[in-house]
Image (cartoon, rainbow, N blue to C red):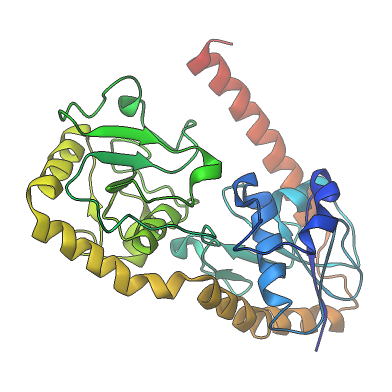
Length: 326
C-alpha cells in the first residue's frame, strides 16, 4: 500500500505537534480555513482507516502528496513529487498530477475528482424547543463574493422581529439558536463554479431550512424547491423567509428532506469517498507517474501557472482601481 503524505502550509507548522493529538470532536480549530482543513482533517480521519498516512510541511519523494492548491503554489516547481491538489476556492494549479474539486460541476477530467469539503465538527443542531422563525443566519465569511451588499446594515430583511445574524467563524458549529440558514452570494443568477455546497450541507446537518442563491454546486447536489429554496433577489428572500415563518408544514418538510440527505456528508461518509479516490483513480495516476520515473509534469504546466498568477495580479489591481478607487 503506497504512502499518502498530507501537507499543511508552513505558517501552521507550530500547530503540527498539537494536530497530532487533536480530536475533531474536542479541540480541532476548523475556523482556520480550507488551507488547513483540506489536508489536516483528511489526515486526522484517514490515519485511522488506512495505513501509511503521514503529515508534514514539506512534500516527500516517491509517494502521493496531498495539499491545498495555495500550498502547491507557494512551494513552486519541483520534480520528483506526485502532487494531488485540493483546488478549493483558489485558481487552478496546473503543475500538479491530480486535482480534487469541491463543486461537482467542475469535476470533468481523467485526473480530477469531486470530493465534498469537510463538514464543521462538533456540530450543535437547532434547539428542538425553538418555535417559529426569528433568527436567520449567515455562517460564513462576509467578504466580497460571499454575502450580497443588500444584506449589510441594520435590519436588512425588514421583516419585523426577524433578525439577520452573521455568525463568527469560531461559532459555526453552534446552530442551536438559528431558524433559517442563508447562503446567497449575490442577488442574481451567477453560478459560482468554484464554490462548494457546504452551507447547504451545514443546514441539513443542523436541522435547519436552507435558502441559497443560484450556485451551481447547490443545484448539482440537491433539488431546488424540494431540498432547499433558491432565490435571486432580496424580495424573493424576504418572501421565502415569510413563507417559512407562516407555514410550519413547509418548514418541517424542508428540514426532513435535509435530514435524510445529511448522512451522505458526514465525516465518515466523506472519509470513505477519500479512500475510494486515493485507492482508485489517484492510485492509478500515481502508478503511471512512477512508470514515467516521476517526471509527468513539464515546463508548460509551470509556465501556465506563472501566466495565471500574473493575470490574477493584473485583474486584482484593476478591481481595486475600478471598484475601491485605490
